Amino acid sequence: MPFSIATWNINSVRLRLPLVEQFLRDLAPDVLCLQETKCPDDLFPHAAFHALGYDHIAISGQKGYHGVATISRRPLSEVDRVGFCGIGDCRHLSAVVSAGGKRLRIHNFYVPAGGDEPDPEINPKFAHKLGFIEEMKAIPADTGDGCSSVLVGDLNIAPLETDVWSHKQLLRVVSHTPVETEGLETVRRIGGWSDLMRHHIPPAEKIFTWWSYRAKDWDVSDRGRRLDHIWGSPDLESDLASILVLREARGWERPSDHVPVIAHFKLD
Image 1 (tube, rainbow, N blue to C red):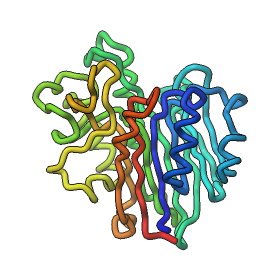
Image 2 (image 1 turned 45 degrees about the vertical axis):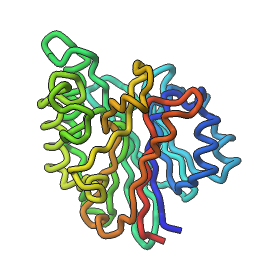
Image 3 (image 1 turned 180 degrees about the horizontal axis):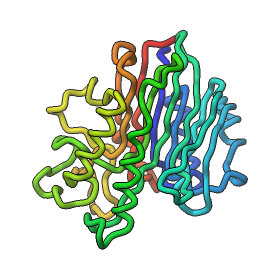
Image 4 (image 1 turned 135 degrees about the vertical axis):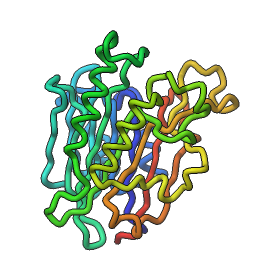
């Protein structure tokens, strides 16, 4: 079986634990990176993951908001948490895992959503988001330590025209404004990252990973955005076997508004 990494903004790990458990039973990724866990570290449901064979867990959580967790069948080492913008939010976690003779440093990110108004002068949430993206430039794909790198998570930006249901109508909507899309692409380019989802799925094809709770019929209207991403160091492009966006998860009972994305690598 190829080595696999999944990313999923779960929008409360305790509330949606049954969905996560079923996902792990059915898809069994080697590593699952969760965002928006909304759970302090002392209340994280370790036992449920251990029961499914995921014995290695790194977490960075807080009560009611934000939070990331990396859950693995394989040992995790060199766990690190980077703070951004001096706020103290739990929005980043990194750890190293071994697969196919390579050491992979996996960054798990939850980028601020940015509120509703795309003007940093009047919206501090949007200013926070832009500051966060600026500081992400300090996270390179090549760390000089012999590790390959993967960056996954809810980056809350849909950078390409085909990452949204309507490029024209969303140009002034937070997550697809030019200052955000250009900022994220600058992070990727400066850091030497490869957009592995778009390496596997041509940029001309639409990809969505998020559909609003506000939509009466999300599946029919299909007004989605690609807010969840999987990047990698360029050496991983040749190891990438497939990308799966689990669209059907948006239709599960009491779902997250995001769906899981899984990258399979020829590393085992």
